[in-house]
Amino acid sequence: MFSSSPPLHEDGIVDPAMPVSAGDGTIACVPWSAMVQEEAAWDALSRRASEPNPFCESWYLLPSLRHLGGSECVSILRFERNGRLTGLLPIVRSRSYYRWPIPNLSGWLHANAFLGTPLIERGAERAFWRAVLAWADGASGAALFLHLRAMPLDGPVHRGLIAALGPRLCATVHREERALLQSSLSPDGYLEASLSGKKRKEIRRQWNRLAELGHLAIERCHGNDGLDDWIHQFLTLEAAGWKGRAGSALASGEPTAALFRDALAGAALRGRLERLALTLDGKPVAMLATFLAPPGAFSFKTAFDERFARFSPGVLLQREYLDMLTRPEIDWTDSCAAEDHPMIDHIWRERRQVGRLSIAIGGRLRHALFRRFVAAELARNPAGPRT
Image (cartoon, rainbow, N blue to C red; front, side):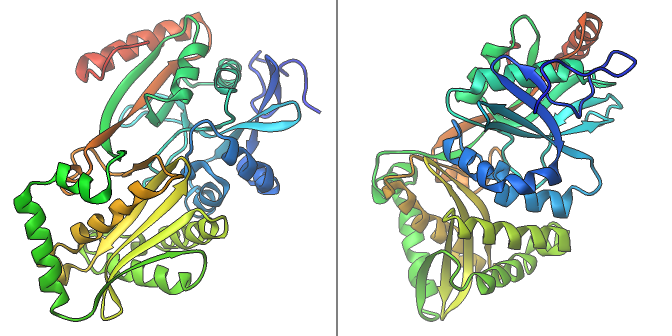
C-alpha cells in the first residue's frame, strides 16, 4: 500500500524512493527494472495516453534502459489513481546541466529517443503534473530545478503542465520546429502543393532512370515476417554510408544495434511497426522504419545506399511514404528530424513545436536562485516567453 504522507529523512527531505499521496493519486519513484513486471499495465496506459509517445512505451523504453542506461541511475516516476497506472516518466538525477555543473532532475532521453512526452492517461494531465511537482519539491536533494527535453508545446500534456504550475516559474529555454506530415490532401495533391512542377518532373526522371538498372519495387511490411533479415539489411545499409564513417550509425556500437533489434521486434509484436523499402532486384536501396501510435505515427529511422545517390533514393521513398495521408487511423506523422532538415523540410510542409522546459522546484530560496539562473540563460539565448 502507498503511504498517505511523505516519509522524511533526518534532514527533512522526502525519501524519493517512497510513494507519496498527491491529490486523488499516488506517485512513486521506482527502479526502472521494477516496471518489467508491469508491462501489461504499461501497454494499457499507452493505449489510453492523451498524447502518444512510442519512445516512452514499454517496448522501446525498457530496451533503451537495458542497453543504454547503464551509466546513469534512471528511475521511473509512476503515478497511480484508483489502483490503475495513470502516468509514467523516466527520470534521472544529473550533476550537470549541459556544460554547466548545476545539479537538476531531468526527464531521461538518449540520442535515439526523439520525444520526451510522459505517458499520461487522457484527462489526468493536470493531476499527473501536480503529483510530479509535489514529489520533486520534496525529493529535490541538490537539484536546482526540473528539466524536461523534447516536449511538444501545443498539446494536452503541455497544457496540463501549465495548469498545474500555480505560481512557480516554468521557462521554455529552447524551442524548435520540426517537420510534420498532416493534411487532408491526397498523396499526389500533397506532393503537388509541396514541390514545384520542375522538381516533381525530376523525381519521375530519377525513378525511371533507376528502374532502367533492374526491377524497382516498393515493399511495405508489417508484423514479424522477415523482420530479422530486414533489420540486418537496414543496419548494414546505414553503416555503409556517412553515418558509418562518422561512427554514428546504429551498428557502430552493439548497444544501439541491440536497441534497434529489440525495439523493432517489440513494436512489431504489438502491431506498432511499419517497414518501407525501395528495392532494386530485391536488394534495398532505401529503407524506413515507422512507429505507429494512433492517432500519430513517427518516422523513426531511414537509410539509403549512397552508391545510388544520383537517383535520390531517399526522396523516391518519401514520395511513396506520403501514403500515410490515406490512413484513416493516422492524423499526423512526426518526422523525428532536426529542425531545417535538408531533405524532409522541403517535402513535409507542416511543423511541430518542441522545446526544453526548466521548472522551479523546492522552497522559496531555491525558487529565487532558479529565477536568477534562468534569467541569465534566457538573456544569452532567448527561446520564447516564460510561464
